[in-house]
Length: 609
Image (tube, rainbow, N blue to C red; front, side, top):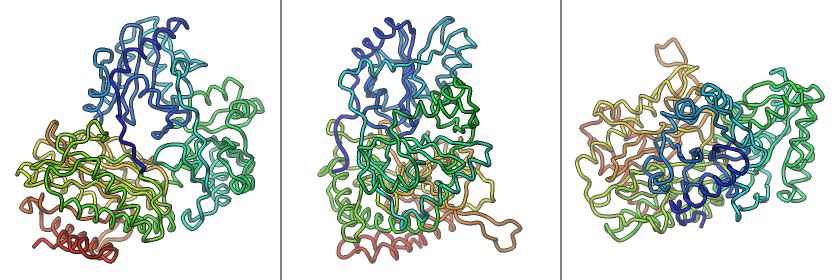
């Protein structure tokens, strides 16, 4: 089993642990401390050792911040976690704030008292974040204080050790390009920025650049480490050598010097003192690295991580791998949905669906000689009101039976060596209400609108996000999350910089893979989300048009539940898209099924007149 079903959060931890933190603050002359959900790499995916926010508060979400002062404490979360956070933190200790409407920088400006010394760990905040926090603190006469020791680490007695899972080489068959060729491209990009060196702080960039994968964080094949790339080709990788076997060490030695992570600070300082021009991505790099460069008289260049866009724009091998992975994954999901259809309401619970789906993926991988390596995130398996919790994580304490008259939301994904998947389907348990059917159809209209849009070069995710919401908006409805996130190639299921959201400012480029996942959530009752992964296609000319247009190719292959459709709410074009999609699903994954599962798929993809 890849997924754990342990309790995802414990409100009772807050009071004693906040007391320990406050004692440390008092002893060290600090009036407050900021605790982000982050590690030294500023990624969404962190090792157990870095789950400081969860340890302190009980909140287990993937994004959040706490601010603890002498007599008050606050937890900041976004719209995905507004329900979850209230179940997981002690509301007698913490006040809940919006990470979107009143982010910490704004909150500091409006709430912090003059003279307050607010501590932070400069390894756990980006350059950009600290700039905003510092400006707000100075505006009210407070001081942002970088600490040399993280107080959570000082009081967390059983804090796990740093991970050192084994690194493996990612074959060119799946990577599509040799690491030495990638390094040449990146060296040229570094030089073009006017830099002599660039620091890769994102483990996804490290993995992509050197064609390696690891296992240091849950569900994402990352090896935690850094790289310092040089325009002249004298690269260095900072990895714990316990992660490297002989073959992997010999492979990396041909590409870069291998150094201990503990050497990074001294090496950055030495480069700075020697007058090198060092590039850091202000949205990704830790404030500590900026301080090391500038405090040692170095020249800092703020520039985008040079691997970020090349990693996001998949090459032909990565695209072919993703298509193959989605066919395989679609067959597994179809087997699961067929099985689910045969279960009587009240006979199974959320956990049983998760374990059955994981088994279907494992068996399908074995049958096709492409094993399931892991799930790509903890499966969201939400029945009834649990489905309304956007990032609900099922545990043995919360698992609900799938009851008659409810909706069941299943958001899951897989890691295969040739691709990463992420799919959401919502199905009825028993007979759905008319309201459920109406809102399911409105959500589907949003998914179809994104699937069929054509757009010119330069279009950003923010420019098309509204298309996923328009049908809902017409009925006074909406959803409190982005429409789509980027997806890696046997890497992170949430990959930047591309996204479809109100804040999605990155241009959508050919080869980018994103999710398309509108939803609707009725608190305390049900949730609806429908999700396919989509690939940005190369621009082509439209008949009679003047401008070449991009579009999206849908990668995910699994039927939508027609029992929840209100066909009278769909236009003819929308019905034609749905029928064509279902015909493609049957054509591509039908040959991988037989017997009962194939019969189920044939029925589930029956054309709608």
